[in-house]
Image 1 (cartoon, rainbow, N blue to C red):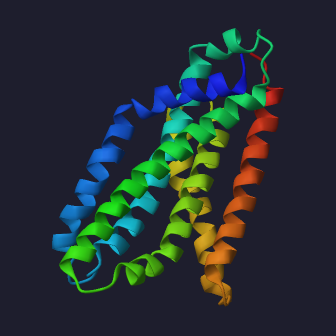
Image 2 (cartoon, one colour):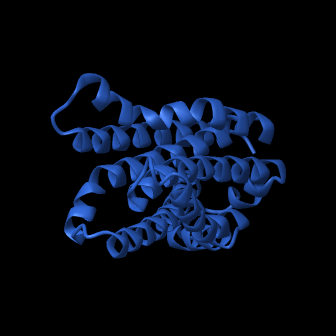
Length: 219
């Protein structure tokens, strides 16, 4: 089975899930509703949406991956996969890409809605709105990427769904916010670049660790 077929199969599984339906429909609606209650604090819906999706989207990405992997371990799905001429790291990478892309699309849909509302409700030019969203978007995608990698790792090492979800909530959240905290702590001149670089490094390290552990597991 080729990597492209595995990735396609993972896409089908995740984008049809109830969690993704909530992200694609419920997340923009939630951001739109919160805008009216928090308009005094966040005058820009697009900024509020970017902040919201970076937290909710990243957390749900990690939880989805952790639960999915643990369920597949418990139902001995990997017994069937691993007797075929299939590389183990293809399984983990395909899950990461499927969830990262699906959640990123959902977040973009929510942010695009916010941009549209800001454009029609205010006199701010669209180029200024987009310029102000560059840093939040980089942070959002960094959080989603790291959270997805965290979800893969905790799914591989956790003995049960409860343990995996607890690790995601209490440990994964802290790990995913590190890229946005470091530039603030050290006052870098170009924080967006630092956030992007740290996000890439963290994602690669976490995914590499998850793949190494998964390769050593016996099924």
